[in-house]
Length: 239
Picture 1 (cartoon, rainbow, N blue to C red):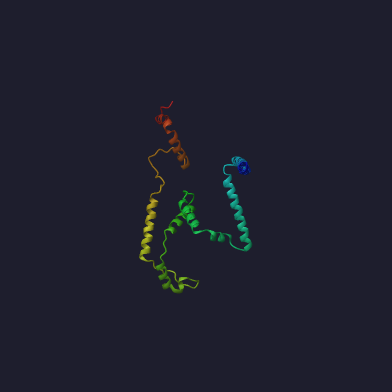
Picture 2 (cartoon, rainbow, N blue to C red):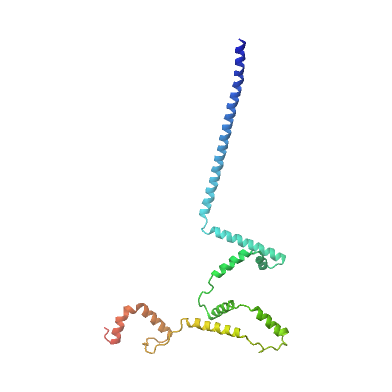
């Protein structure tokens, strides 16, 4: 009888442990379920926000991002100008000091890629482009510069009292370089389209130069349609 009592005592102790373990597992599952439920609601909320933002973006103009970036840049530039004005500094000088070597090199490459020659727009523009092209070809001769500076002495930087007119004698290399450049200009100029020479044997069917250009255009576009009529008029057989 005592042995039966001793065997039932451990059984009663294991039952509360089993119930406690099951309760802990249930609490863990409920906690996991609540976390998943919270994450699902959070994901649903974020998805809704993204849908709303995307709808706003689709309703905006196609170049809205570029316009926004441009406006932000202009506001930043205005603020920088005001700050420089308050400090008494030169805005362009401050801006140049902020440009890195990499940015400067990139800007220079983009500038070289552009073709500034847009064709003939006037004699002044053509002359200015030629001047820029010729000055870009000049390579300073520092040795000759220093030698001339030593030879001239104080007259190297003339004043109103200096008398050095006509004393400079160009070197043979300089003369050869100038002759070569002039010959290149003459050769390039010969390739340009020149004014067509007047043909004395051509029929005179115009009253002035403007009318001659108009007749040439009309002949170019409608000549094949009016060739027979023109021949009949010349022969006097037109009906």
